[in-house]
Image (cartoon, rainbow, N blue to C red; front, side, top):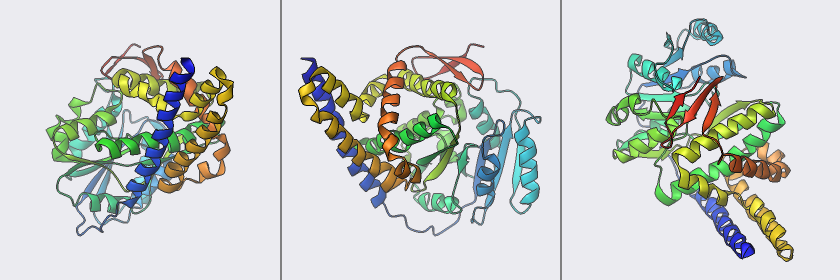
Length: 374
């Protein structure tokens, strides 16, 4: 009986891999017309400390080939080392309007949302791009955003990202997972039901869409504020899309312990806010299911071969066809290692409701909100 159950799960996972390939092809088939106008854009950059490659990340925003934009930066304290870097770069790019805002400590759990709220209040323009400190973009990113927002119905666009690790084996594994397994979930959801969520690293939105959902007050207590922003915008009737602009998400170089805590934070947050979807993640990764089926019924060893083949096709569709990711192309052989690591972290995610984030411990509530413990 167990082997039949596992066989059914594996069959579902193989079907999911096929859906991933179709979803990737459909995403790439979208053709974007050049923008007929260049509406001014406010770029909001919350900062906290010096990330790996931060200077180069920020430089790609200062060097946008776009006629009218401003950049706002926010730090909690003027003593934050990121503040000095920002002032240096502002001096280096005097022709780009920019400001640095010192926010003070956030009065609620999500300090990033507090920074965004303070920057939005100071921003001049109605079209805003909210982008994390670990994001690096092409010089035409704002051009692409402007072309997409030529559609007056569009309220929010979220950028897919290519994860780029630092010199760490564990971060490299995570990047492989983000560029294959995670993106597959995004693409399949887009194809099956449309975009009803957003991804955190870079989101563009109209100010009126943010106002309609209740502003940042509506997401200030959520850990996954990005997901909730997209969900609320879609519920209010605004168009939400997965942008044509692929960005780089520089995830740094974490040792094993830090990387495990990071993965657990992500998994526990997902389980608490979307429990059914979290269980469904089992189908996104066929290799562990193939191994379990082989262990339960050794005569079904071809299940592992089938899992590897279908997983490889899905991984190529996301990392190769969509992201043009050189990391996955070079380290394709490490995907089985990442898949097993991801499966174990998924299992661990069922246990515990606390997370560690930036040195503080939080409790994640059943609706995805979180509270500071210490």
